[in-house]
Length: 126
Image 1 (tube, rainbow, N blue to C red):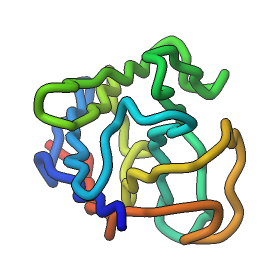
Image 2 (cartoon, rainbow, N blue to C red):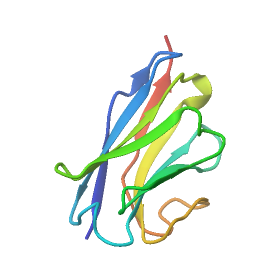
Image 3 (cartoon, helix red, strand yellow):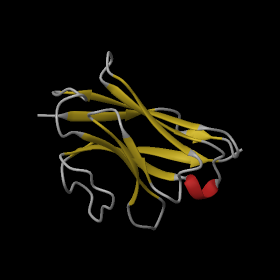
């Protein structure tokens, strides 16, 4: 069974870059039909799909974040990474990484479509 674990700083200053890592076990991030995805949930709001990097290495980002987001991977460590630049307090929330078997670009319910990490809280504050 695939397991995912998010890690990274829980506190980021405004205008800085948020960097998170998702470490995957129980499956390779290069295995066919894996779409390694980042999702977030701001306080009091619904889930927001941010983007994915596919098993092929290609990526797809949310149009609303495209100018600030980057998703990369380290196949040797079986990890994928999120970078979000120029953060503001609106970027605070719980960040999840997930593995979907298809290129999902919208999520409504925690845990749907595939495997999820437990989430990590990110606060944006000076």
